[in-house]
Image 1 (tube, rainbow, N blue to C red):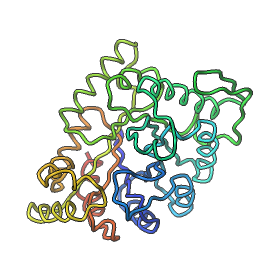
Image 2: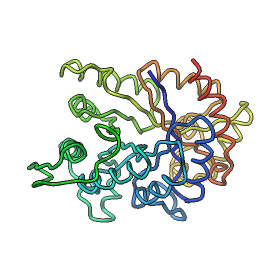
Image 3: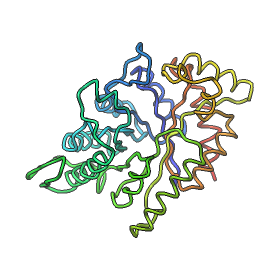
Length: 321
């Protein structure tokens, strides 16, 4: 199993995004990821966000090696036809480096702001199934007709096609039991994007494996990925200082709503040895793709020592096994 690592910087500043991904490309990272939000309800008001499609198009000409992906594209305010068109175009201009993680959306307040229908969980799962079908068929067929509950197409065409055959990699972010149990027949990879202890992730692996067996699907055929939000430093003392700075200077609203102890528990904080052990635990559970976000104020000031430390002391030893 090939293990890959992607960097997902905060989408607050275009120069920071570009600089951090150039540094990731210089080191041992394999991918660069950006999220898909019109605005982010969990950040403080002074921050704004870059738009994902235009930013990745720009980055495709700045980066030579990193694969470029969206994690997570919200299916509730993106249409599969326009996603297919934009994704095919981005795959071409990036020379076959585009990847996509779809999500069903979690924060209802974002929908209320712009009048998007939120829908019941069962509706969002059915929409995801149709979205995937439309997307993959538009990427692989000369023309495609479809009549579903959410989408209707008649002789729809997307040309030119993506470079990657049969199409760019697609995964679905799923942590709820109903969606996980629906995934084995979707023909997509599986991401867990929510921060959760390894014990909770093991339970979701059990849900997935049981669902696969019930539906006659090999559990190992579904590529697995997780996002890890982390704070890393070389010594315990330096780590504690960095955790406190991160808590006091976070652009997110979460620290206002939790104690420092809870904040420390929420994110993965550790020395390289500790972080490496946690990642190996995920690998033992079949995870092959890691999305890394550094929860540090230094990072947002273009201080990328954490990227270098993680690349040299975590990624390189794991890849050398």
